[in-house]
Length: 91
Image (cartoon, rainbow, N blue to C red; front, side, top):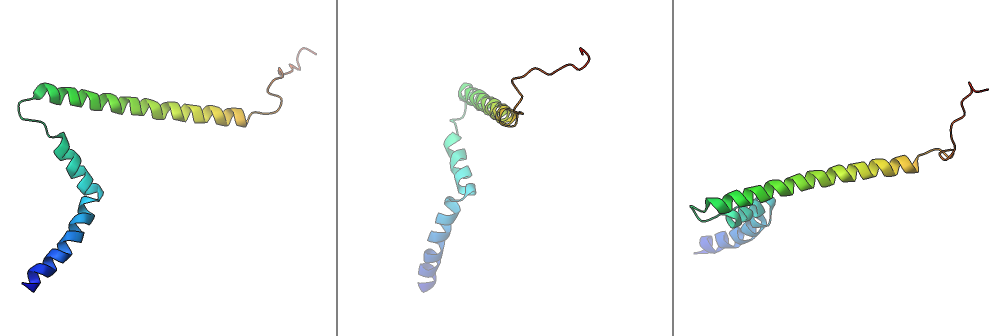
């Protein structure tokens, strides 16, 4: 009797920790994504949407990188950026 109670006392916090971890969240997401068997059109639509979200995410990261690069270029440009270079050959 005491052993069962002690086991229950130990397993409840352990289950809470596991379910709140990345593994528990991944399992919950997998269970939520489970589609009724035979609904292949919905599965295909979901996979296309997931692929599109990944593509948009990649493009967003690329735009962020390009924006950072341009900001660094503008911040580090020399003070004579508005002047045209002098050609010493014209004399």
